[in-house]
Image 1 (cartoon, rainbow, N blue to C red):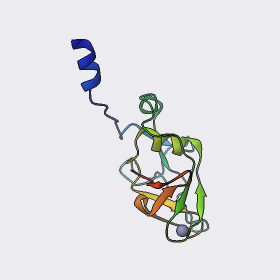
Image 2 (image 1 turned 45 degrees about the vertical axis):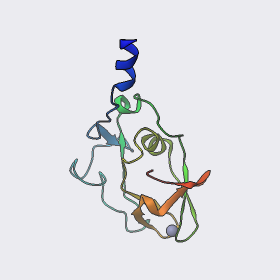
Image 3 (image 1 turned 45 degrees about the horizontal axis):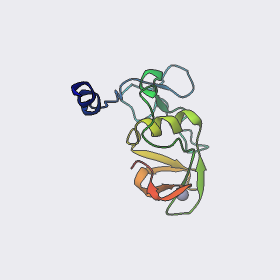
Image 4 (image 1 turned 180 degrees about the horizontal axis):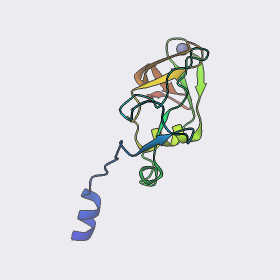
Length: 124
Ligand SMILES: [Zn+2]
């Protein structure tokens, strides 16, 4: 009984400093930067993004792994890679901003909802 109590009261803590680059390449910017590489002026996207390290991903998903979201302002759907989607699923507040393929810029995650669950904002 005490064991179960302890198990369920244990707080799940994600170490956001345990992050790696999506590309697997060394980061071009500091570890404190919002992304490990600068924005590519052609696409509007960063040349690389942070994702949680394997140790943190292994702590498990608290949300479904979703790869598509919609920007409320323009209504256009953006898809992302699995590593980014898994990072959201482990730590929904890991990213403050996300990219819209139509507007070609990053906006606060609350300006987007998940394609398969329109009532749920990204980052919630
Ligand atoms: Zn947009």
